Image (cartoon, rainbow, N blue to C red; front, side, top):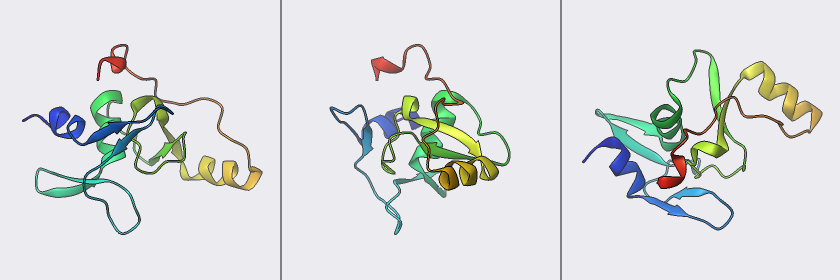
Length: 107
């Protein structure tokens, strides 16, 4: 089974567009998956799978604020500095850095 198949087999698609992880979660509530012998957060795996490598120094965030969501359209990468500015200003980010792949709706 490929990594993509493993990931998709544990996703529940919600009416709000979230792809909620139904597998194991860590103590913080984030979905987790073993990849090549290492536990990884599912949203980071999904980002890399459908959007490419996470740029060095950036964090993957959820536009939907659902930490179990791994819909590529809901994930974007920001620096720690930008995350702090967003939180301090109490505004929502307006544009995702990552755009979903053209065929993301087929999943």
